Length: 313
Ligand code: TXA
Ligand code: MG
Image (cartoon, rainbow, N blue to C red; front, side, top):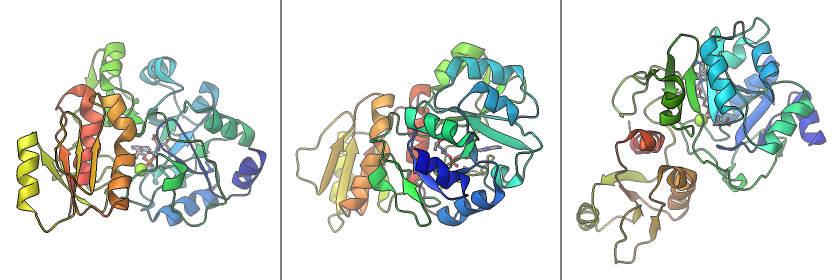
């Protein structure tokens, strides 16, 4: 821990686990270190980063103001898979915010992440530790980046889908990215929640930077199947392809180069989704048939990641 914190203090990059996905960490207030994140990921510098803090006090210290909406959400869901967008304090460098005046902040619920932040004594900026537009890493073995001083292996992550990003500046919380914190829990706390900003469908414009339609993409092309019959039909249509299957309610009684049945609940499914896509790629799958997941609030984050993974330009 000490050597990881020392590396961060010197402006180097450290990969560390959070409860959602692994993060590519840099000292959150050091412009030269932040610049290295964008280079290592191949990500446009206009995409803002999340600053990870260990306590509420550290969160408010990097915010210009702390609105009531932010206070309520923070008290209810931190530490946890939730990122709050608020106005940034003056000393937060533009490299952390994509040049904008707002900043994304979260307290992760992972002992390694928290002790690393405390050992550094400053916020850690961390995007997911994957190259731009590729699958997020949920295990240390998924990490494939240059310019990393150290990878801290914390085993498979607890949730497997990134944090829920919420604009907490106004009186009504606005979801910018669905994530591991279930929107039904946010609604239960606040009543009214604005969910219109997220456009999970592949062909619409993106409103939040870093929310391009193509994101989280595996090598395999994804086709959705509503039913077992539809999956069989797709399979028959592509005899020349190496086909894989990800389902959660049925199994096909034929041998495939890759077939995985995920849990039929959004938490269990979300935890295993990126690992499943990583494994499909490792198995050389060209066409991945994915059973359609329900269009309900509780499955929102999973559906969002799947639709982005399926998107091709
Ligand atoms: O679970 C997570 O959030 C992981 C772990 C490592 O904490 N991090 C993560 O970071 O997913 P990244 O950079 O891959 O995604 C951050 C998301 C992007 O969609 C970005 O647009 C949004 O948060 N975001 C960050 N700051 C923002 C801001 N000031 N305004 C609007 N969106 C912001
Ligand atoms: Mg990411």
